[in-house]
Length: 357
Ligand SMILES: CCC(=O)SCCNC(=O)CCNC(=O)[C@H](O)C(C)(C)COP(=O)(O)OP(=O)(O)OC[C@H]1O[C@@H](n2cnc3c(N)ncnc32)[C@H](O)[C@@H]1OP(=O)(O)O
Ligand SMILES: O=CC(=O)O
Ligand SMILES: [Mg+2]
Image (cartoon, rainbow, N blue to C red; front, side, top):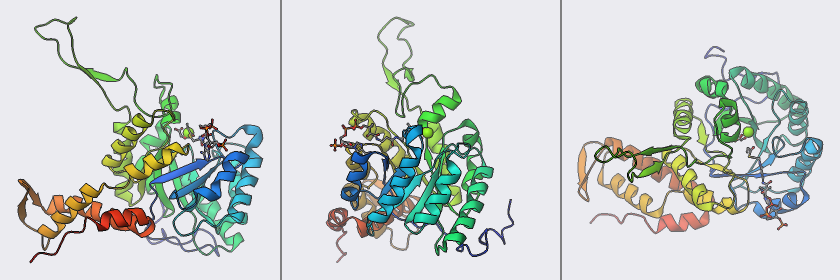
């Protein structure tokens, strides 16, 4: 572990100074595309401004014989595209033990490092993986003459990564956030599922038998397979001042269950999710933006709480310092999203609390 005094020093001579706070830029939807797929690549310019993050994926879902093409495609797209103020460019590199990760980082940082905001690192096992990427990025940033540090986002998709989640979050000032990787995590944990995220009908609870009749009608309710993992990830991220995200939802056609999974993650504290297909973009944006109703209520509580201490009654409910803090989370998120999303700005403006008297 580095000493507290050294933590924010660059790891290479000439590399930019690390940030002391992760920028709070909207990232409700991280939209994945395969830069080696001409149809998807052609859609990128049209997606700018409609998603918070465009992520050029180089890892899983890109065929082994297309890895170089994907990397080169991303360089080309980054150079040819104006991402504007409201869309960031991220990449997901190949796993650190793969034949491609070193070239991914070397090429991307030296060729398009000034355009790249965040590097997503898959299958992170512990702080040692982040330390490796941290130093290498610093060396490459210095070589490329970059003036702002590239941030790092880890995917939580191994059992060891889960166990080490707190140390991963705190391994570097570059750490921007974590995403849940339910597909790889399920495999690594030897869970008996065959899906990419979401629930499973077999994972349920059942009411007790009535009068001991175990064969009688008994209601069941499907449970959330990912509750523990997401909650643990959220705590680790909050503790270290970085951002938690849900990850992929593979049943593209089941937009209803997708929305449910995204909403569970949002309510538990995640700031965003991945979209794998254009149909998931609108769902993610809607779910990860607070509703106008919640913003209106939060603003009323803030107004009613005056200096923020004590207790008041509002619509029959007690509000105090702690509920105020929750409301401030909603109000601050609404204000931040309004800065880059004009439709939301208009929606939330209509909920402004009128001044008393
Ligand atoms: C599981 C663990 C993980 O690692 S998840 C992250 C890795 N996976 C991915 O990144 C998957 C990304 N998405 C995809 O590859 C495709 O969306 C998949 C799921 C294969 C479906 O593609 P396809 O059968 O073409 O769907 P479709 O016919 O409904 O497509 C309609 C038009 O939209 C396009 N499209 C599709 N996906 C994207 C995307 N992610 N970004 C941009 N465009 C996309 C298609 O190319 C198709 O275009 P067109 O209308 O034919 O011109
Ligand atoms: O990379 C994502 C996953 O679910 O695996
Ligand atoms: Mg994965």
